[in-house]
Image (cartoon, rainbow, N blue to C red; front, side, top):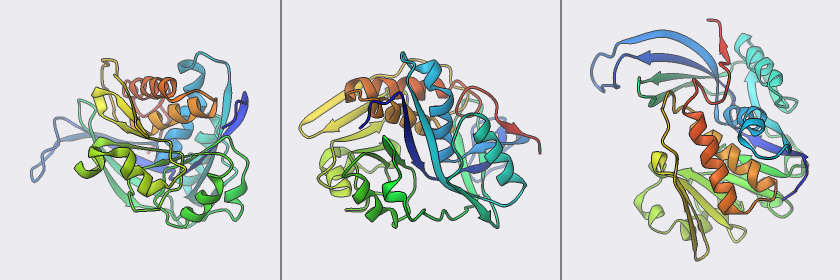
Length: 291
């Protein structure tokens, strides 16, 4: 899994242009909702996790160790795509593997309530061409935040020689070879939650060691083969929950790639995720763009 102070975390997923509408009250389905100031900022699962690794490790870790986030994604050859690449590069994320030749950039509308809860509406999604050498790119850890079925045989090769952490859903049998699966309880059904490790084994195969599930303000739990580890979350003032799960995954990837055992890694992930909800966006700094 690597113990290098200058290793690599490979992150596969989306980089998005998020347009934020702040609501004056809770979202009311089927009714009129008053909103304010439509602004834009960087988003997407891969971008959120990568920025967490680049910006939060120095302030949320007790070690000086460093892991370089390398993103596999795509943006369009447009104004939004160029702005996103510039921002990621400036915060220390490697963007050399992000395809930027497409016609459009992934865009989402985020409805943000006063208490920090958000509703995300996907507007466009840029397809991500997978590099032909993806199975063999050197990395201490590979985090997958993508539902592309073409990744299944690639991860089957990667899991043989390095740590793979995959987000769930999807929960299709055999879909995501990995040592660790991570997801939110709100995205998983009762059958899965009744026996997470057995359900995870069907998704990830025999390589699976842990299924990590977040429970919002109630913390998180890791389920192994006959083992369970629980950790509580601190009480925090919630400003914005957008991307908190992605930041949690970044903390988990950081700790495991640095050689920490799951009890410590789970606490690190909770610390990162809990800190994230106290920021506008996912990490320290604004990362907003002019409209």
